[in-house]
Length: 286
Length: 298
Image 1 (cartoon, rainbow over the protein chains, first blue to last red):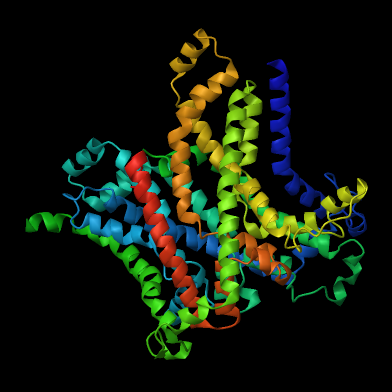
Image 2 (image 1 turned 90 degrees about the vertical axis):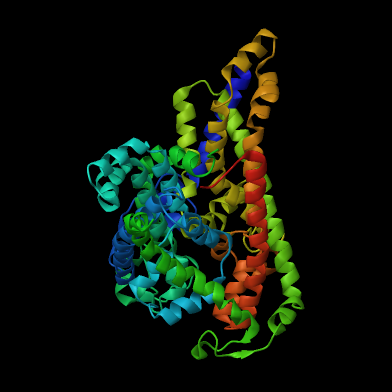
């Protein structure tokens, strides 16, 4: 039994290490000199420590520009998503006697999970709506996150009816009850949904790639995607030659990849705190 | 009656913005499947192009690539589902045996971190690590005297790299679900088994696993709906023309035909085929989950 326990613990530590190793490795490369990186000397610790890769990417206009686009989409997108999620989840959490056509409304939203028109019709719709090449192309098409609506809807249903009823007796309407009672009481659930929404916005890259015409309108994730796939049209220019001895394509990519993950690592402790709750609410509810 | 309707009017108003947005960005694209029956020209609008009946479908189904792509899609997604479920189940059972709480909690926390990272970032990391010239895996291979392998460029390896890296990214998620299921097993059962002289292995086999059966069946059933989703983000960020033969899937094919080659009708037809099969699969899986596990999404 002792032996098994020892093997088991070692195995699980190894497993956790395998999950972290790629991140640590790329972090080490981003802080290493280009010579050490290309000679394959870097494993888990930076060799010939330097911040040059980070200085280089922070001086890159495209990188900074894409950061501002991502920031915009994060702020506006999350706000729009959250407002809509609440506004849809609350009425749908009512029973049919309180909301006529409730079942019809619910199926109207659920059906979009089951069936979709596919990539091309979706793309053409956005083109015809005329929001292509604007920040709204990254926000409006995904403005209603149906899964989050379901998550919050189930949460609203778990709130004791008496709370709402007492508010109605005091003469409050649905709007007041929603903002003064339901939203404050669901703050933990809303925080979870909000964090997931933000992570989604941070990670989304495909919409940027096909809906934004010019590369200077790309959000960070899309910009990263194009440099990683080797389609970087903004190759190192003449004035970069000074830093070149320390920075290579590889170390610069590593630094940009790491910046791309950093915000997620920062919010991760908060994400995982509510994570299990989220799953229990969303996927194994019985 | 009328008074009641007036009273619930605010609720209907709350739904309005969401309904409009869903109508535009989800239901108009559903109408847009008419593109599959057209010789589609974007400037003519959704309905202005010439209708050619089933032409696009007939053309699609005689494409030799389509059967390869279907085969790749099914192989990759089914492998992901099976390997992913087993990996998560084994990890959860092993974690359940750990008596050191700090270790259990740390491992639990670390294994699902990759779930939140995007395939852009993870793809970039994988490309670096697996690079046959400078990647760390190649260095290890050379060190132990083996020839470095170009994992992302060889058809023999590519689908397996896809399956393994996806399992690596996602197994932590299901591990957490299984762990939650384990904690809900009645502790009295273990006490009874101990009195009967069952060791830990016997307890796992006869109590923990049967106790988890409903949740295993439920997750397996729900994953049925994903059989045609082999992972666009992942494959798009890792593949290259050299591995189309083993790694091209429906979604990447639709993207290339439609948005790179501008054969809109053809791409819509293939996409519609996928949507319809997926619709049947997802509906069936939800129905089965509802029927046998009493699972409801709302």
